Length: 164
Image (cartoon, rainbow, N blue to C red):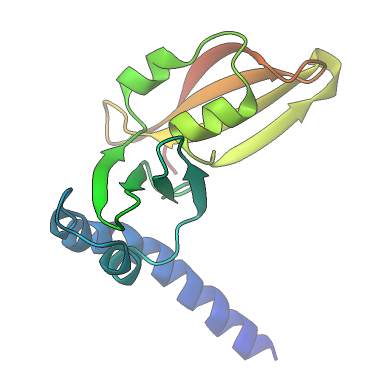
């Protein structure tokens, strides 16, 4: 049993490490206006979450959190063809986070966070995403702080940690 558990853990770690490599191969092949939903599923797998849009389209979320630094949102039209593809963990989207926004709005904007922490004494829940940083030897994180009593965004912050 112990060997099987170790093998499963090792295979999961290898699979997680290879996801970004697969993105390098698969993402350039996904072209808005051309690629079908079936091809996206074949190349990217099942989305981690599906956001329904008012126009009948759906946006599939492919997060690479907690180990990766990307989250891809691929919008599929009602005709089952890709309408748009975006890497949403970027400065423009971080700037769109506003005080008073709901958890659902933030999930829709940035995808699933890499971690969530609750600080009961501060009445705060913090969602954290690992993001691209300026220096390769550091890990950079973007954080959204929610008020646990009302559930809305209180503020944002970031932190930098040395790797290793």
